[in-house]
Image (cartoon, rainbow, N blue to C red; front, side, top):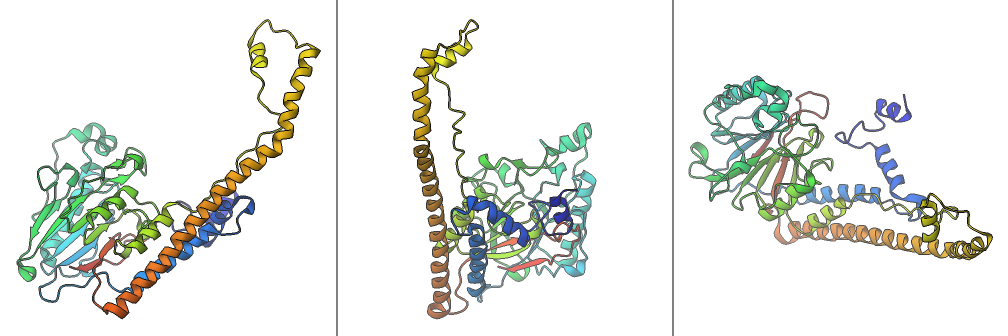
Length: 427
């Protein structure tokens, strides 16, 4: 057993990127990010510090928004990543005529039978808890729903059978990428009961950046993501399985989805997928958030020094290469060897120049990187401070007009236990 495995067994190092980093992970990343200790600035810890500071600013700014006082609010109950678990009904609050959202990974094996059991359970929750509608998107573990991909890999010939899912009344599947027409797949819901007369536009799709083999459903390559200009601008609630990058995601979310959020700015975005990211986070789509995301997007690693050429491995001249390639080559005469010596001597004499030039370019690149990181950190501090002061001094409580991100995973990390709290939002 290697040292890495021992440290992972002792929980001093995380076992995978899907686990939260430990203090030792932060330290080792930091040591790798400052090669040869050229720059005595710990870039990784700068990001760690700014991350905590950014979330402190969010806390001090209060709730992202408050339910309207002159009209009845709409209750939205959010769950995700149940992985075959049927939560005790006592854990799910009364719907009060609102919405129940499941953001994907209903099952573990992706079979038709497992998905059907989850749908039947959601139908029972709707009836007994009084929800207007239950909205579901797929996750990467819901292979049966991926007709052209994971279903065939998981089930082979059985995937071509006639068995179809039975969707209980009021339980609806969202596949916005397949939406056609002027509304672009957006669903408009008009409420009865407590919120009678109100309406919300909802759009959802369960695709995720590639995270496994072909048995995982609805995967796409990060470099060619499908999100650009796909979510309708009128969307009030967005439901995806993947998180956006840098928010409740252990940095495993999708940067393309984050860019689309900046364009659409939905009031509520519900997702799952990264179990350790469960929770909620306010977003304001302002300069503080932009600076934070810019800092996180560059990562903690600075470029490593270039590999300098060895004095014993200078490339041969063209004439010597052509001679070595000839099967009837002759040994170079002593006169020819004398002509080659000055070239090697010049190379050796110029080695300090090569070294100095390469090191200078490297230092310029590192210093530019450090400068950009420090500027982004300063912008987070400045805009975050001014936002808090503006909130509590100039406007007062209850004046926020932001949006909310909810990672609704009910599975606690990689324990397999569905013990995370159910998320409730009043719109």
